[in-house]
Amino acid sequence: MLRIYYRFWQVNWYEQWQYRANLLMYLAYWLVSPVVYLAVWTTIARSQGSVGGLTANDFVTYYLTLLIADTLTSDITVHLLAYKIQDGTLSSELLRPVHPILTNTLVNNIAFKALVFMVLVPIWLVLVLLFQPDYSMVTIQSILPAVPALMLGFGINFLLGATLTCLAFWTTRVYSITEFYFALAILFSGQFVPLQLMPPLIQRLAAYLPFQFYIYFPVSLILGRVPPETIAWKFALGLAWLAVAYALFRLIWREGLKRFSSVGA
Amino acid sequence: MSSLEARSPESDAITVQDLTKTFKVPEREAGFGAALRSFVRRKYTPIQAVQQVSFHIGKGEIVGFLGPNGAGKTTTLKMLSGLLHPTSGQARVLGFTPWELKNDYLRAMTLVMGQRNRLSWDIPAADSFLLNQAIYRISDQDFKASLKELDELLELSPIMRKPVRNLSLGERMKCELAAGLLHRPKVLFLDEPTIGLDITAQARIREFLREYNRRTGASILLTSHYMADVTALCERIIIIHHGRLKYDGGISELSHRIAPYKLIGVALGEVRECDLSCYGTLVNAENGDGKQYIQVEVDEVTTITAQILKDLPVHDLTIEDPPIEHVIEQAFEE
Image (cartoon, rainbow over all chains, first blue to last red; front, side):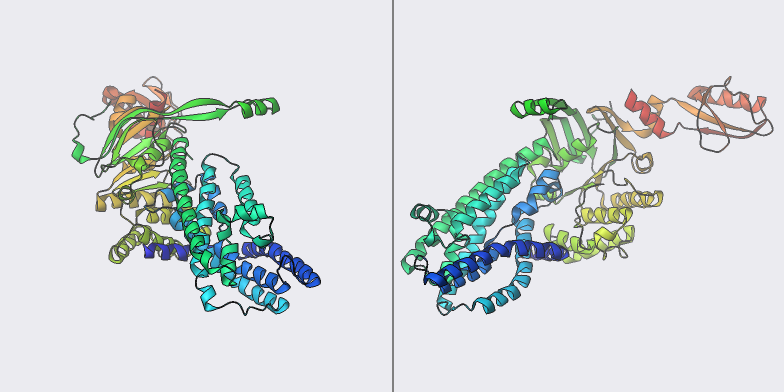
């Protein structure tokens, strides 16, 4: 099985490498909003001393860490899979004796991350030079639990993304559905602002939703801002969401295949 | 229709019983009003793509699967490979029900479609081959042996290290076939394996398929619009039309049944123009050999030939079977 993933990695890595220009465009688009939020909130916090108890440095470290965490947990399944379902090219992958999504699409996602990182790291270092964050609160003890948290975040995001993408078996408008999902994610993951600045209702809601695992939870772990007594409970909630996402994905995949094979492509 | 009775199930690679596929296709009139109406209530028209088709294919057999466009060939191949669920009917391939898509089944068969690619566009075919090795769990030893054999037959070495996008159509088809056969499938479904290829490339692919079949004993069901593919590879053909099975049997039997006549080609020595219509029906066979052709009932061939030789200054005379294209065409129309 490892060999299968390794070979998928090679193929997908080469393929992604062919689309470097595409990647730069994507990265430019994707960097804009966090950097704008970073600049805006830091300026406000500097002028007022703090916003909702967060200092300028809190914002700088939050958004700079977010850039890394978001890359690690983001999911591009809809771009990798929806068109294959719609134009029928999924067929050739279905006839392979491996699960197309849990091998090819998964690895393609990861290859994309690896490539993004090659470009992101230098940009990130430039941003660090510009904003001079004080990262003294980050320790090995705060990074270690963040590693499984980031994996969990990616796992949930990938499976929910794949589930939504599978709606392409029924509708040709799957992109508008995933756009809505991305909008929810921006709000509830902490990408827009750190969740503690959200209205109490949103905060309460966000605490139970899966989106926090994409950004807010791992970033807070790295920055040492999660109260130790809640860490275990958050991981349990994350694992529960992972299980739910997996079950949903299996269900929609099975039903989607039935539809694909009765309608034909 | 054919010799279905004489078969034993153990010797069959493929068994198809009453296979039927009906598609529901949304339909609407042109225009804005119709678009709005169809938004509220869609009309579906059932399309009977395949209707109660039954046949058996033995182990090691190569069978041509023929029919005009839209006859249901590809739909049948998709059901047999597992991509489509039939509306009703049964099929067993190597003991598996195809549309359950069991991994053991997928490892034992291949579907090669002329226009679809199982190769990644941006990377050399060799890398896709390595991926297939992993996916199909082919041991290093078997992989090397398979690749060597495929290289011998298809001359892959010069092309498999170039990105697939830079290959010609024929080169790509060779690589597609190789990718589909590395795991040495026991059943091959080939949909137009020579489409768009030049004569030389077509001949090579045919040669290759025959050799693959000889070496591995695999069963092959292939569709093609090139009769040369069919006559070169298949002793048996299955014809479907409008989703129904029209004929299942040998090619020569089909000729005898559909076209029980021969063509007599006559080239005259001195007189170039001569009316042959009194000997048989004149046929328009423009193959540029300067001969005139007449169509003659099989049992009259000897008499008429003798008569022509006696009456006319014959320079050259041939007796030929009617071209298979004509026979098949007639079979479609029947």
